[in-house]
Amino acid sequence: MAKNPFHASLEAVKSVADRLRQLTGERLDGERLVDAVLMPGQGTARVAVNANSSGPELDEQKGLANLVKGLFSMYRNPAAHEPRLHRTVTDEELLELLTTLSMVHRRLDCARITP
Image (cartoon, rainbow, N blue to C red; front, side, top):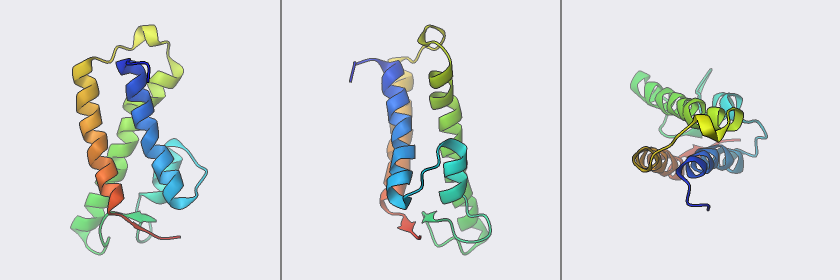
């Protein structure tokens, strides 16, 4: 939007939370949102990227949830709470982030959504 890697990274990461809310109707945000819709917990996750029926599938599901939480912690939270002056995002870092977020969104494209 402003052709600025800092703002682009912030908006790109926020797109995942927005997507999870659109898929589920949840109003939560951040880690609480991820735990509520992506983390399998006591059964199948509400946004399931696989059948969540075996140990490896549950590990994959938890891995995606933890990856999303990590991206929030690494890019969204510092950007929201610290002055831009103290956080530089290079073009290379932005491209790496966008590649990772593309994979996350692709997994969400194929996810099974349950109420």
